[in-house]
Length: 51
Image 1 (cartoon, rainbow, N blue to C red):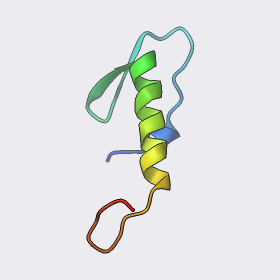
Image 2 (image 1 turned 180 degrees about the vertical axis):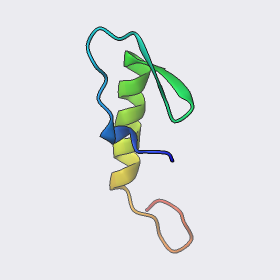
Image 3 (image 1 turned 135 degrees about the vertical axis):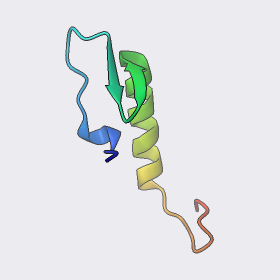
């Protein structure tokens, strides 16, 4: 079962993590988390496109 990246916390002292079948470094994890937050706050119209 895949979980949202916003539910995870990148612990100190860890170089990389494996989440939902993908390896993340601290920088890539924070970037992906920011991107996920942006898409969660956007709404889709009836055609599935972001408005």
